[in-house]
Length: 63
Image (cartoon, rainbow, N blue to C red):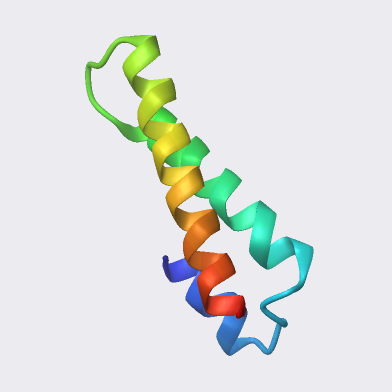
């Protein structure tokens, strides 16, 4: 969320691909690497949940 807000504060349009696609992917990779002792399937599921949620948040904020 912080990266998404920082990109908005920097003046990058909500419709810019960096803000819509890169932010959720980066957040998902941080979650996948940063969580504790979970199985690979649960890490992937959690990362996908974060990416989809942040992508939807970006779309709602863009409209």
